Amino acid sequence: KAGVTQTPRYLIKTRGQQVTLSCSPISGHRSVSWYQQTPGQGLQFLFEYFSETQRNKGNFPGRFSGRQFSNSRSEMNVSTLELGDSALYLCASSDTGNYGYTFGSGTRLTVV
Amino acid sequence: AQSVTQLGSHVSVSEGALVLLRCNYSSSVPPYLFWYVQYPNQGLQLLLKYTTGATLVKGINGFEAEFKKSETSFHLTKPSAHMSDAAEYFCAVIPLGGANNLFFGTGTRLTVIP
Image (tube, rainbow over all chains, first blue to last red; front, side, top):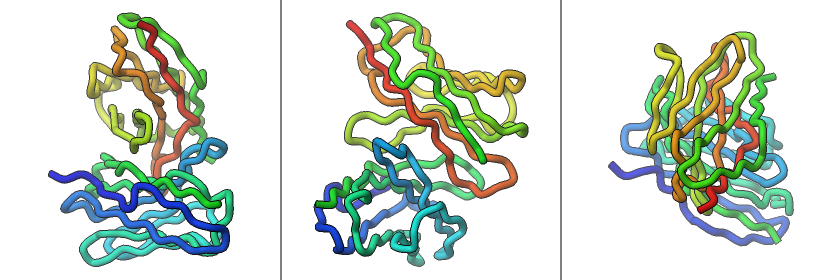
């Protein structure tokens, strides 16, 4: 069974630009969550999607958004990038009610 | 607000020695409890989880953790450290009755000395 796939692995963007990250969950998993990992703030929850609907959202500004497609693949978008958005962005998928979240390898975003 | 405390941001043990990584949670109602491991430039890998049932949980790579309600703890142990155990370890919780997202501790970096 293929794991959670995140693309790209590395990304360098300039302040003010926008970026889109992609996550393909494990086949059959309908829930996809996104987390941001930084040295200063640690691991923080961004949002969760289930069956194309945002089910839960963390405490991040509106510049951070996401969506989920009918095949459960998810994208997150960050607009008007700031230096502080530099982080490892992790995606996790899970089976309904299982709480067995499987994480991808992440996308390392650097904003310069 | 849910809080997870990992005592010790860095822990060093000798190869073959006991590994003990500490985790305490703050809620009065015990949450679901998890331990994850992260190797450099990698995502998070689930070591073990406690939702219901037996309070001693066995996970992958020889790790286990015991849920102790009276101490609001979920400490991670391994009887004998291996060099390959060197990594960062995160304790996480999902509060009962709330949303299903994970709340993470700040992590403990484990160093194994040969």
